Image 1 (cartoon, one colour):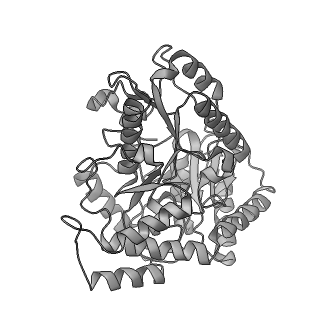
Image 2 (cartoon, rainbow, N blue to C red):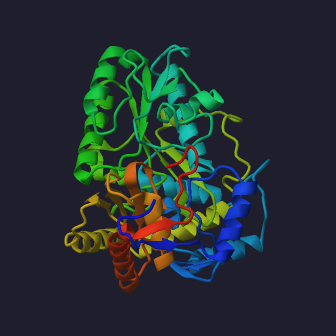
Length: 445
């Protein structure tokens, strides 16, 4: 990439970053397509990288750290627990777990809760319980029972839920096929498209008696308008009711006040409440891996002893961290803060005019840039590396998308400074030629 100007600037990686990046490339695999930025510490809404540079955190671990880095109340709860007990979750359980279980069920309005560790495990468990309900309650043949996903949604990369990913996302590489979980209509071979309720109306009419559930992220942040996503989800939810199909809301990324309500599915209204929800990641403020599956008795009751075992679920540390985070979300009314952040983002971006910026939607404190890749020098990886050099962490996404979001505890001064860095990065991006590290790795975007 030479840039659009004959005297285009170059952006090399800092020396310590380059060394870490070389080690990472030599010895590490996996991850989420991150650019070459490595962190040493963090506090609140800021991070310190390996060069000692301070960066505003506008990724938040894809909403994991909605409460910022090292929130003092959560750290205090963790330290207190670490000094009392390490692990007591097999043969008995933490005395805090029944208390947390009651709180979660009462808060979200469900009969029972099951605990897991990661969001992927929660999604996998929800799909498993839904299939059990379909077999035992709806009386679907175990060989025929289906759980459907949708395009452009993400539920993790463990084998159990990988079949819900887009075709070509690795199923052929690892043989992660399933006749029971899919986001493809088996009769037409077409992907069930997010924002296209007609795809679900068609498959429900074709084989509704075989379908136990649909799982989706109610708000994903891909559309230009949140209303488009809400209306789509309401239509699918209503279709599920009509055909006796469970509607599962995956709240792993967009739950915990991020969109302006505690659960993103709350935007669907109480009459469209999901049958089941999965929540995790940010439910602990990102400070400890904990996730949960909630639903009615007739679904959750499918789980028998030894059907859902997670050594590090329901631990004292998990319970203490989640209880502390819930107190912060509730007492500080952070759903309201998310809406205030959205209002400021909309006001700021309404004045932007860049020919290579298609649109920049906001869903509470979660927002994106969608870049036009037809313009020379405009890619999400280049944007993210340039924004990091200016003091702001952003994340790459597919099809020219830059993923952004503010922590709910960020102050207005830092928030507006972040907006200015984003604007400045957009303005400067075409002026750069070589940006070291912006080369797209094989299989990445």
